[in-house]
Length: 407
Ligand code: FHN
Image 1 (cartoon, rainbow, N blue to C red):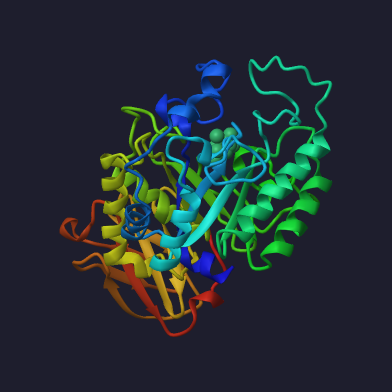
Image 2 (image 1 turned 90 degrees about the horizontal axis):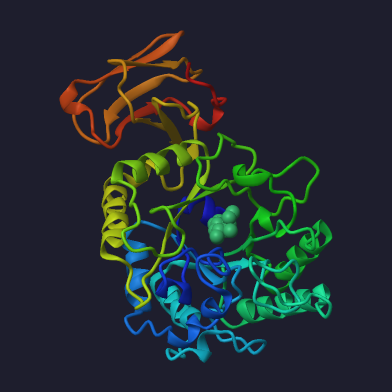
């Protein structure tokens, strides 16, 4: 998992024919959009502006190291060419295999390709329970036949598209899916690609949107807090998934997060020793909405300058709080000050000597170390709007320092 822990930052993509309607993927089926309308959108799905090289180039420009794209969401539509269903991309006017083109470009550009694959499948006749508004009788449904279908498609995804970084499961919450199913699926996926990473939503262990795994439950390889910054945890790997707008799939005029919000989220997640998976929703014509593209490019510009304080670091030793967060690597601690509510930031003392300090974001700062505390202050001109990064060079490895709360 080293590539993933060092990479820190991934691009989440929720996309499908539902983008023609601008409503939420999966969840608007049988709600805002009648089922017979929703399930026939694919006949008009023709994203001729889709350009895998541009998408992967944008992911790189954003400073992300991996892409997680919905191979199949809860609505059952497969954005790849599958032998096991006609409800897939080859039945659309577009016909081309989106995942095949993305796989080629990710290989070329050095970005890890990963798949989000929903266990829930409200389209498949054998999946139970039925989705909203779905009045199909359940008598003939055989859930284990659906499990076979699920495994067959995972085999296609894990043998036809090259090395895959992560299998990002979701939709594990229905009672029909059991922990036994999850453990068997984890083993099956690993048998196809032994180095693949699998999140905790393969099983039943995820405790709600906090995404942590309940004691004794099968945990997969990492925890998955959603739409929230995970708690500091240096012992269990975790990744926050979050939308850059409000909806996972594209929505016209959706509310877009500010650059400050996005950078603060990345810095707080990294400070908690987690990863950030930030979601965009492409448009029905295959373009990524320019304002979403601009926002993640701005994040990439910030990372080009200050990425050494994020990539390949671990979280802490000063745990995140309203003041900011810290990351460390080798003999360096990066103190990310996000909020100068007081003129002096007071951090707990550490059992290492600070031998040199600097301000990565420019300017000057005063750092006073005693055996009681570390006091940091900086003139207004040296305080950066997004994140003031104070670099503390130590006389030994920062990883020796136990994580500590900042009062
Ligand atoms: O229901 C899905 C939702 O549509 C979205 O895919 C998120 C992303 O992690 N996961 C589920 C909600 O927890």
